[in-house]
Image 1 (tube, rainbow, N blue to C red):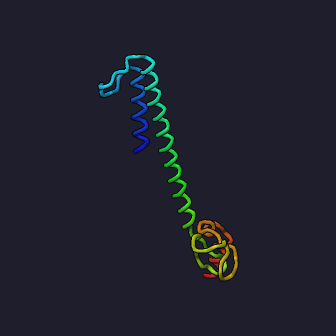
Image 2: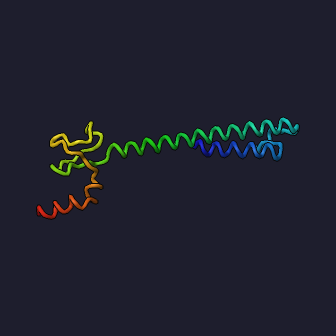
Image 3: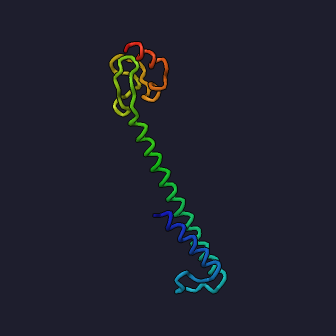
Length: 120
């Protein structure tokens, strides 16, 4: 929403500089220095609003990415117990002290897949 407001304020500033009036037509800026200064104030404000909204969007995406990282499933290749990253303090299995790997690594790793095939 802030991004749309910033773009709208930018266009208002641009219209003030080009025509000398606000889009509603209630305020006229016929004196050129007033027209330029008020137009530049609108444009500067719009850049500030746009910058803040983009910063907010980036922060939200980083938080979402961090949440996804915490909820990644991990598995112990030896005892086959599974954990989530936010459940354990170290990346080692609490039972056998073996390093945990992500579930996607376990599926992709041929060494572990062959052991599963032999046991069946």
